Image (tube, rainbow, N blue to C red; front, side, top):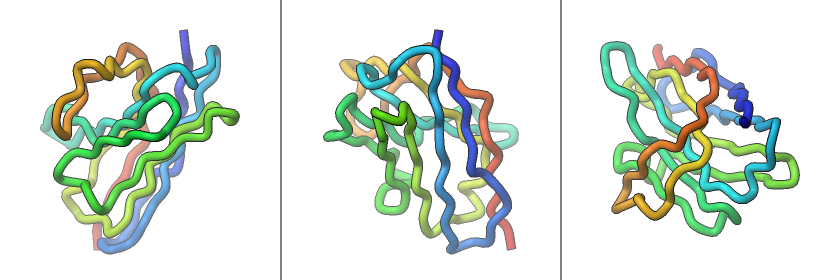
Length: 126
């Protein structure tokens, strides 16, 4: 089983940037599609972005397209989420997800895989 540890969250002002990291251990994630999800207070967990095994294909939810970029470094077994022009509505706990079933991705949405990190809090507020 893979262990996923997110980091990089914090309290930031609107319009600024953050980069989240997801460090995996226990197995190599180079053969898996990876994703980020988020969950705001009182809301269901939602898809944010996903990246293919080699990093050549990315999918972003419409709400973050053009502002968030997902990337990966397979030798480091790490996935990143660069978040720019942050808005208060981006406030949520962000979760790393492994083993995304890429064949079920459609449009700007992917279902979740089986493995989750513990999450990192991102708060956007002035």
